[in-house]
Length: 325
Image (cartoon, rainbow, N blue to C red; front, side, top):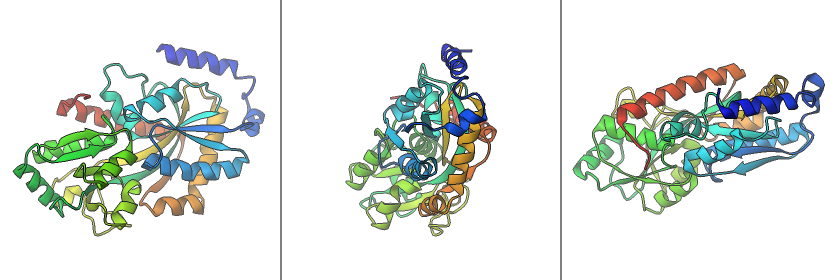
């Protein structure tokens, strides 16, 4: 058991008199709740988090504040949440990047995704989409791959940061396609999009909600989705697997967590309340507009999904030989 876990257990025992049973859980929250999003405003995680927290604020009758703490592919914000008191007033809204992917790149990760958090609920899924700047003469995956082979090391791609899913998914495409693209990491999805729209980068893999507006405005050209199946909101887009690389898949997902040691009664309340918000028409409509699908389920469901995803990307990192830049 690591030091962080031991400290959280001690803090949890100290809090038992405050939230030990149904009465304590029912009185929560008695003050504003902070939800840490480990990326800058405007990215997919931020968009989805704000849709959820708006409904939570209404249901609870108190303020739910989104605290954007970007940097290091989500490690900075996630570490901050891991070190918070397990009292329910600091939660983490995390994506695959800081939980399944980025820790594999750090020589000494500041936290362990499977040990230093309390899973609450799986929020939802969103397919990633591959977009290119309109100046790039490629309208399909095959054309993009052919162009990259003809111009090795001359086409750059943006990512949400070193170790993020957008980085690793693109590196996986490079490995499977045998191409050489130059990596340009950013501190989150929003700045990566800005520079790709400006033409400073030519290729970007991003969660669909983040770039949907730019695709509709034709500032970016979508060429494929990274999910196993085509998406309803853009059925004309082929999957990477069917277009060029059989078996390829890279899904974005989000989950709600608390620090390790969060009392079971509070976990149950948060799981139920967030689950109800996910099934509400406002949230479902907001997510569906950007091809995101709400999930839900028990804390155990999130724990099992995270474990499988963490182990899967760990194998990819090891096999690819990718190192943090």
